[in-house]
Image 1 (cartoon, rainbow, N blue to C red):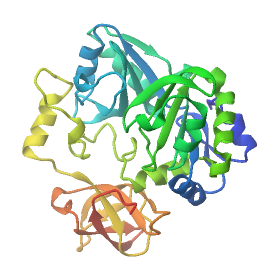
Image 2 (image 1 turned 60 degrees about the horizontal axis):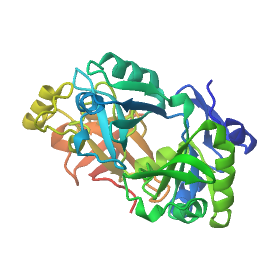
Image 3 (image 1 turned 90 degrees about the vertical axis):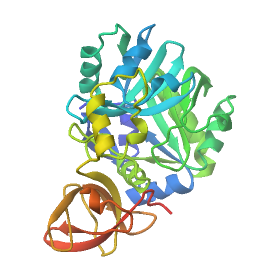
Image 4 (image 1 turned 135 degrees about the horizontal axis):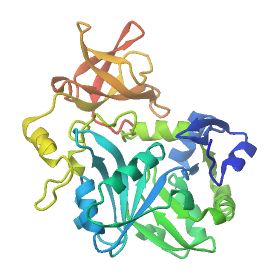
Length: 361
């Protein structure tokens, strides 16, 4: 298994470790619910160094990104970030990702850990524009410092005004005495906070500085288990569960990152445009359990008569709401908020209701 610059720290802290995307990653430390609540109420730190980072540079960078991503990169100015996806030729999604406009003619793509090789090969094979591509995944470490008190801890470590970094923007500068740290605000938890990108060589120094700065605020290390429950409470998609090579951005409710603007001839635009105009045969919805039970990935969604209408893609017990919550694809006629649906939980038919996320109240 691959390691991150923090793997030894996780083991020393007694984390429950498990393989994820080829990496030896912490799943939990003090417990998923405890860590989830720490992020919602105070401050938690996630090691997300396993994520992939690609640089796209040069005079042809924008033309390349306009072709391979669904969102309109031309609207980005330096310091801004965009959520987007790589559409494939069959109507599905190669991956969902973030595009950072680092400086003129220079962009940073942040992709999912499990898809680094697939995404890199996709970008290289579709780079007919001649953009300069560089895979820096092994040369960047990343911590996500999340929670309402994250800003109080991190502000102690930098002269950059963190309150002047709105959602989906970033700054680059000195942090904990180290230069060229990217500080971004794109949290995957819905609890506020920042992501820090830095060289692996300074990882130990930054980890210590962050935990010292947050000690009086109740800072805790957090594993991938709580990362999943936090993102699901917000209704954020996870690639491999709610998105994959067979799900289109239109089906997934990501029409807002699929921009059919003049001059942007991105991969598979005609098919996605047709879906937007004519409708889809399934759509991703959120639902809350009415009956007691925890929905899980792969469970069938059924109607009152027991006929299959879809499938659960993500599910958990909400640590905040104390009820089962989930997302899944259903036939469009079952997609309206307030619609009653049922989950087949190992032969038990349990009632749920379609709701619009976020689930966290």
